[in-house]
Image 1: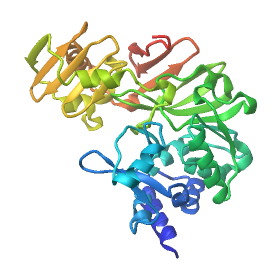
Image 2 (image 1 turned 135 degrees about the horizontal axis):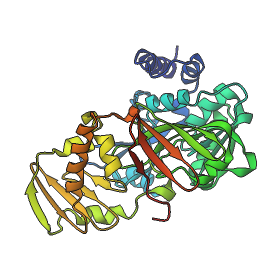
Image 3 (image 1 turned 90 degrees about the horizontal axis):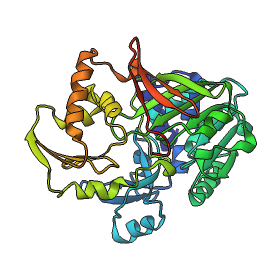
Image 4 (image 1 turned 120 degrees about the horizontal axis):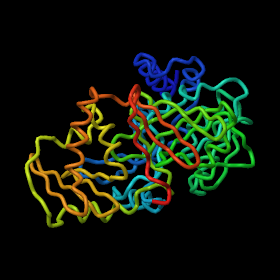
Length: 378
């Protein structure tokens, strides 16, 4: 057996052992589809935060490809970062395209619950690897994949063809879906969205499923929704799936706000008993609920900072918080923590999500509590 196939088998065996993949069709797809064909080059982050280029010439290229980890393939939506990394040994920037962590890919593919003949729309082609897995199980004719970046899409299409797969690949805004091949039995968002786009609801066949991540900087929610009459309802999955946002849904406003929060003079500085870890770490149990209360908030680390579009901000320094702006965001976080405890410390899988063309909201099982998402027009 060649090295790539052996490493692929080890990766799949680890996912099977962890019970993140059970369906034999997807097990076989992960064993057969060569991830390295879709990742001839990618970035790995160094301890100093810069991004180092990995090419197929590196002796550890295959070992890095077949780790159960995300592989970043683009920074700042600009392919020039790749040349910068090759020339200068590293590049800086924000990841804008990647090959997702295989475990999360497997979880989402299984959540699709595809049946023979199911028509699938994938939002976010990326490297093309996920589209290849779909084609392996369903066949090329049933798979449509769309990406907003024409350059990313062209590379993916070429690598799909090299691996023997030929889905319908479309350059366009994934928020609008792809009406010419609708309706779809399954819509798979491999990039996160702040709301379920109305086009996805309209283009999903009655009884069809939407599987995607709702992009919330705190408490990201991986959901599986069933669509009937333009209304999608379903459960937040147990797993914490995080993806790069659909570009139209990226919190671009937050970049400067998070930087400003490093040095902004505080309207209030005080001690707090609520550690930042409780709010930002999925393992805390509270993190998902915190995201419900702190809707639209963006976050950064070192030190922990929270910012809101209305100008409110928090800077967390050990047991001390500084905050400013029209709202006291950390007070809201502490109030949410008290409510979470009063409700019995619910976890993400105890929530459902509903989306219609006019309203979208989370709800907690066996309670009247709901948390609406902000409207798309702000």
